Image (tube, rainbow, N blue to C red; front, side, top):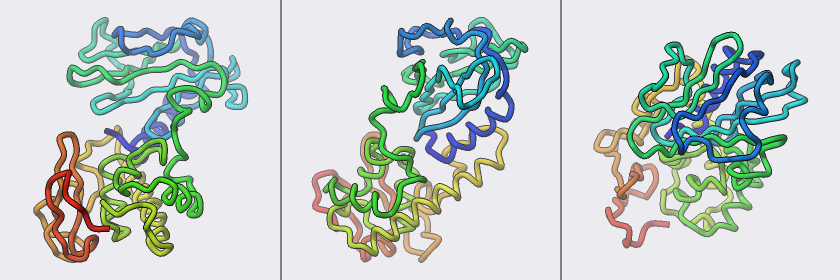
Length: 287
């Protein structure tokens, strides 16, 4: 699933191309695409796209009045790509595009198409009038991971009392971090993925906060060099896609704990004092 660096860079790309364009029509192409019923998409017709922004893993298509001013945003399309979704310029504008979920057509004839690979059809669009931050799906999000202060992070870690890998991926704690970034942040911070958040000392919190910022900046720099959103396999990583290979930091073999839907990758030498964690969910893990 695209994470904060990929979403942020893609928002910049879309903004540079489509900002200032007036919406002619929004068309759901799949019955599961539009998650809201009020306001109606027709209310946004003739509104100007002020900017494409982001919040966590969500893209925000912000429409203002006829002048397109960001200070007068009236409607926001909130878009979640999920695992296989993509929002791209629609050059063909086929009546039934493969994987098509929704289309935004602008008065200049250009269009944006939301597609989703596979059969799950979990990508979605919410249309919100006014400020979207206080309503679903954004209201449940914690602060964006690249904006949280060190002290706020420390407080949230202490209050959570859970495994730190799960904490980082929980969007109600921090918005924008997924599986890859969680693995990379913890490796850079030299923290066990199964450490309890409430037991991290001040130095560990310092390292964790610094590693989050560095990992996001690293990913953002890589994405800004692409013409469209990259694949997970191509994103900067030291452990996430290197299980069984040598750790770039120390040379130890990168290990993993595998679950049904995701993998926790780590370096024993860098993160767990040399201990290889048992690969099952009932083991007692290193602090």
